[in-house]
Image (cartoon, rainbow, N blue to C red; front, side, top):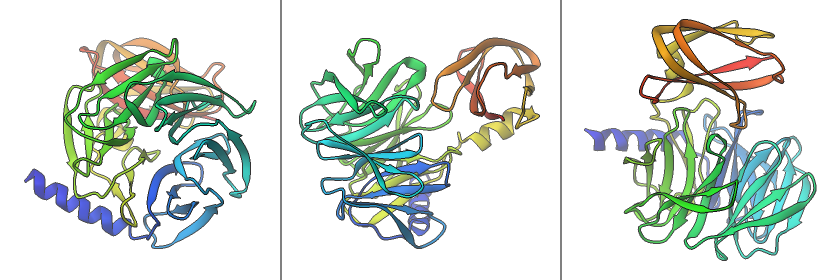
Amino acid sequence: MRTSLTVLCFIASKLLGAQTFNAPESVEYDAVNGRWLVGNNGAGTIVSCNPAISSTLPFANQIPSGPHGIEILGNVAYCCDGGYIKGFDLNTGAQSFSLNLSASFLNGLTTDGTNYLFATDFSAKKIYRICPANSTFNLMCTTMKTPNGIIYDGANNRCVFVTWGSNSPIQAMSLADSTISTLATSTYSNSDGITRDPAGFWYVTCWGNNALVRWSPTFTTPTVVMTGLSGPADIDINAAGDSIGIPNSNSTTVVYYTSITTSIAAMEENGFDLFPNPSTSSCTVSLKKSKINCKAILFDNEGKIVRQFYVTGNSFDIERGALAPGLYLLHVFDEENVLSLQGKIIFK
């Protein structure tokens, strides 16, 4: 039955992703404009698309050695282009940034959402930190394994990255001291992209079995959730946490994995109500099941902790205080410190 559901999900995803691309290598969800940005590695361009329609729109061009690893920071979509990091205005697509890192092959890209980008150098086995505001960069570390896709994990002050090669482990680079640790060993080979859903589950694309693999939040349990891919590369998840874009770099398609039971909507529906939301001053959280001394954490849109407290009872208030206008993510953990509820709060 599991195999049948996977096949049906893949077929449905292919129908949704009917647009034709040119060796698509990377995707990035643009939450501001409600669209996907897709790196056409075979054409040196970035295009925008909506899986509900069958056409694509041009976004940026003149990216001769890429694009790899697209990442949005502020009003700019950055990408890896050989040894360069290039940036394009999110509204116009005009190039607004170019920085030569003298790297060998920049591949994966992520951001802390505020100041920095982090890029992997696939060929030289290095990870760089880039400050676009100052057009500066520094080498963070040299790795033993070949680093590929990378994602910022603000709650743990690290970047998590996947690696290329046989039995490719999942590793992390500490942002405090640049040390490398192994989070999970693996029987999968040639891992490429990594993203994470609202409940903290990780998703990794693997060329070895042309599949999407889901890992538990603590990297203890891997599950193949989608098969039949073709060179699945650098992935991303949408703002609702219910769709993962997967570029098939060995073909002309981008498909979407949508069987995510831990999306924001699913967790909100089963867990609590938020009122008023949006709010200008405070938001009352009404739980459908009373809690006893359970931890609640509020993150900003870049993954930084801005509130942390314990909850007893079936309701509590979150005061805005000095928080800036914007989207915030609430996590509520159960008595065993396992994430059980999640929701979005908007202060305006």
